[in-house]
Image (cartoon, rainbow, N blue to C red; front, side):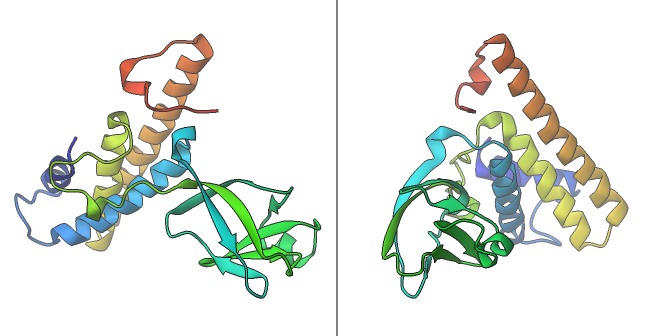
Length: 195
């Protein structure tokens, strides 16, 4: 499903044939949020990227496409901010907003492997498909529609679409897990590689 088709499907469910209550930019932002949320549920090895983080005074900038931690060199452990403050480990990394904190603070650089965010929905041409497998595109539509109805303060309809969105993601996870257990590979799941 292309970016344009996803936006058309969202508008159809909102009963809008063209830009009305919401601009394309609004819908693209919410589609991007839904895509990122879904990506966190389906982390795949082909989405792993590395970066050398250079630290000054114990902090470095988080890569702009960072989605989730995977691994760090030299035994550094990724912890939450509370554990970081309590010195749970001697070699630690933690996220604080758009920064990565490190202990020991005198460390100058570390190679970080992480799951990258999918290409932003706003950067796709109208004829490009999102990086998520096509099986998951319906989830982008449902998440976007839920957010749009929430913005219109139509909370009952928004919650209905949110429930559909969550059920869709859970069903997709179960389907993929079931296929992995049976050792089957289907065309629509081929591009999802779970550990």
